[in-house]
Length: 143
Ligand SMILES: [Zn+2]
Ligand SMILES: [Zn+2]
Figure 1 (cartoon, rainbow, N blue to C red):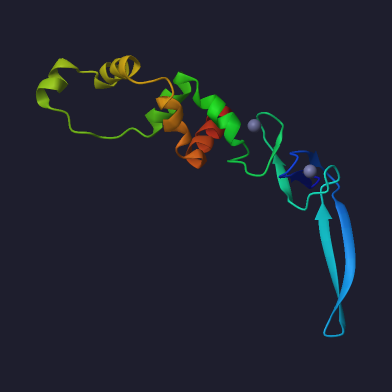
Figure 2 (cartoon, rainbow, N blue to C red):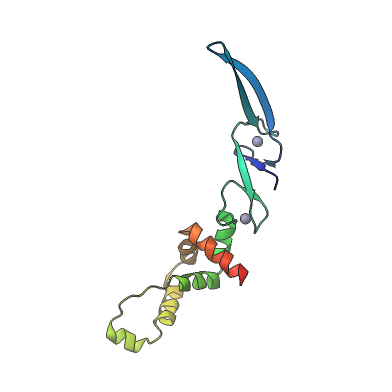
């Protein structure tokens, strides 16, 4: 795979940075320097970038091959958030009376969550740990 770079300043992606080489003398000895620049805006602030498997765009950081933007997008789907939460099911103690009244406590709480919480809480839950969430997405894609 070709190495790709992206510019922090202009945001453009490119394969071939402009390379400048020069020789300086330190204590009389020649030392060679190499510096890479963005071919579009000449910024030195460039880094290697990686292709997101979802959107195909290049980003500096990916989580299991997926960019943070795509993960957030995926998290908007309530069903996805629900399935992700299922994987991290937690044991909690429930008052005996409530356990009797609500034998399916998950259903009851989901109903309450939909009434009470604002729409982005499930997104925040998923994107709280992008490594874990992207891992879940990757495993789900394989099924
Ligand atoms: Zn640039
Ligand atoms: Zn993406």
